[in-house]
Length: 256
Image 1 (cartoon, helix red, strand yellow):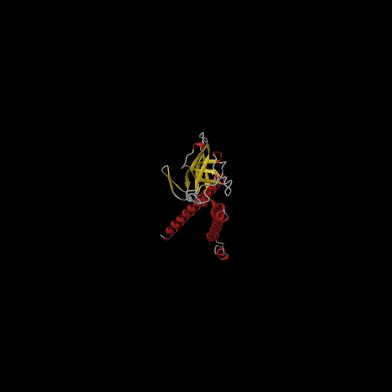
Image 2: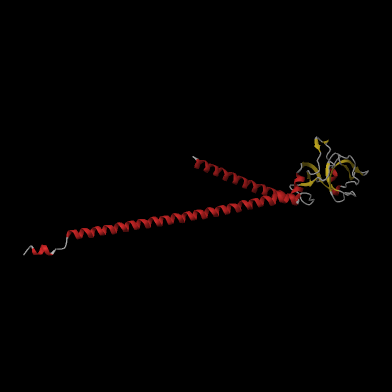
């Protein structure tokens, strides 16, 4: 009964170890894929996935909720906003949320995602640009956003993913999310190799001991057989001597 319980425990431990190992492998693979995808696509104006671009929100300028076209639009620093390409930037209207290359003095060249407050047009109806603002501050941006600087319109967000991405890119994040799981896998495989080697040596030693015991048993059998043959030979010689005993001189004289 005790042996059966030990075997069950050993089996459960092996299953648990395999599950943990595969979870580590899956986690590491997912993190690596996530890192590669985000590095090659997030905050890249020249990259998109099925017409969508992704940007990490740097400030809370759009953290205040504002209902627009039945959509509750707000996002915080650390979120990733999903931006959809727009075919005709001049067709945008007040209330749309757009991502654009900023021409403001403070944030020149950075990607900003703000809401359109007003469309500026010429007398003949040609769009000159858009007045944008952050819902949290309510203050208009310094520079007018011209259509050629527009990257797309807001279509959704991934809450908090930007913070995780920033953490993975940092040294502690790399150690925790990538390096440590790999080290654990290497350590686990190393321990497995040592365990298997010890088990192999143990089995090899047991096999050699069994072979030696078999040889010793065979030798013992041969010795016993040889001793029995010698005893049988002695008995046969004794029997032979008893059947034809030598003639004594007394027996010879009695016949005269």
